[in-house]
Length: 220
Image (cartoon, rainbow, N blue to C red; front, top):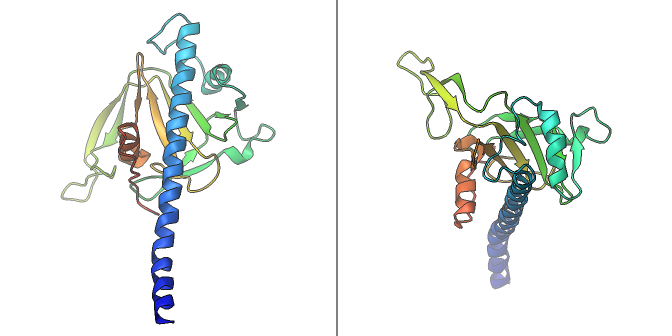
């Protein structure tokens, strides 16, 4: 009886860890698949527009996010377009995502593509490929650094993305958190890069695309 009790305690301690590891491996696999599908769609658009290596025809700064989303849809098989939450059947695809490394929520409200495997891609088209914005100096976790008086230290940030793609690899299912099932891609003029901002899951994504396959996030 004592032996059985010990086995039961060990199982109770290890089973949650095994389940969590399985779920994380599944999310990593889905992330790799979604990233590949997105890359392929962008390449198809480049080929069709006769501009291989350049993204400005598809991600046109003179177009709205909704226009770009509708155009982007044709490069995916069976993608559903949800331009806004008021469109029939689309309300549930407009929700909030938790950050990876700091408390808070990000409203995932951009026009969206819903893929047959339930991957959701939100498209934010920018009005220019190079922009500057006032911000605060941040630490590695994406938190504002304070001066001796407790005020945010100001900074100016230069953005070089023509558009931003936010994607959730398992749709509306939990955890709905950057660095676990959600990530960000920056569409630059001649390449696609991932976000380097830790709250948007950059550490996890770097691990995934380099084969480390480890998710880095804080549970909130």
